[in-house]
Length: 52
Image (tube, rainbow, N blue to C red):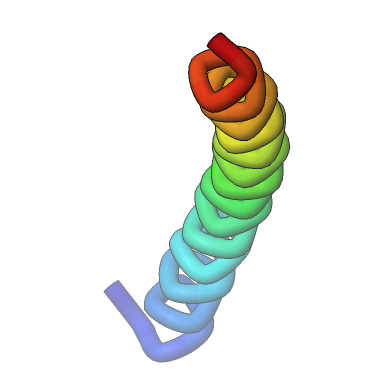
C-alpha cells in the first residue's frame, strides 16, 4: 500500500467517524428532548401529589 492509498483509507475512515459522530449527536439531542419531557411530566405529577 503506497502513501496515496493509505491517505485514501484514512480519509474514508475519518468520514465514517464523522458520520458516526453526527448520528450520536442526533441520538443525544433526542435523549435530551425525551429527558425534558419526562422532567415536565414529573413536575406535573409532583404538583398533583402536593395538591392532594
